[in-house]
Length: 445
Image (tube, rainbow, N blue to C red):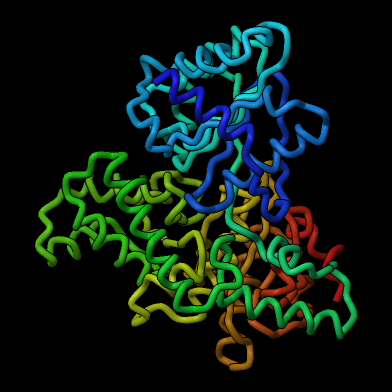
């Protein structure tokens, strides 16, 4: 195994880096801490690692000072937690003169495939002159292991597939929040392409048939590698049927009891606790996300029906049956993922009179934003319903403004000393967290 590791180390050091498109990520490496990057598979974590390695090389760091291992590499499948130290031994067998003299940069890709990896990483962080970067597609496993073993010696960051802004960069399109009419039309045109292709880097620019096949391959990989194999699931068909059910009902409310009854109707005799575990593991793999009701009572929030969203709207189009999913649900899904990029505190809201608002987002500074999603405001009944629900929620939460995201509509509505910004989805996707918190300043329509 040591000889195999030496060969892998040397092969990478002589290879050309596949750095792809630079990402708009605010990931910061802090000296003395492990940098942990988490996200769904194929979201670009490995490419980001290669970009970081390229930065080091441009700073004058020799590639001989860089060790990169992808733990999905079949050549190291026999590597176990009790012989992980062979990695360090293999490196210093190649470069003994560097030990305790030069800083070595360790990059461990998808390390969660090795059980009990954290004592190894903790030990080399404490005993070697090094910096460490880790990627993984399991938020819970990484976070739990880091919290218990690393004890404050790691910082975790999330990597999602391309945002619309990154997609525009991929297309070499310049953009800003304030643009000419011609430039607006140009950006809107590229949004339509983003709407069809979705956000996974690998599918950008490929035709629809290939895109659908790639998305379906992702789906199977997530189910079998990130869920069934990782968690040793004994009812794989039940998990698969549940995943299809949820994807067919994106942006809809669900309850555990209804999901259990649905699986029982298909002949799956699994307990309610198993369904709860599956839902938690879907989110752990950055595949499906659950949104709870906003309520001061945690028990009420957890006991009420929840909403489900997917990592990518185009992924839904490729995998779902298409019977129940509509463009309004997909639009809501896209808004959710955009919000999820900068906040985990996302809920849906119900007013005291039982009117529903799609999202209330809470930032780290405890500020809030209310966001409604509506494909079109052209119907008078729809317009009244969306405005009244949002206005009532704004009053209850004592917020001066809110957003309604649409496909194309754009206006500013002033009512009862409140402001509602109606903005098209392409413009919403160009906002950042501070913009959402300070709508009046950034959306002076």
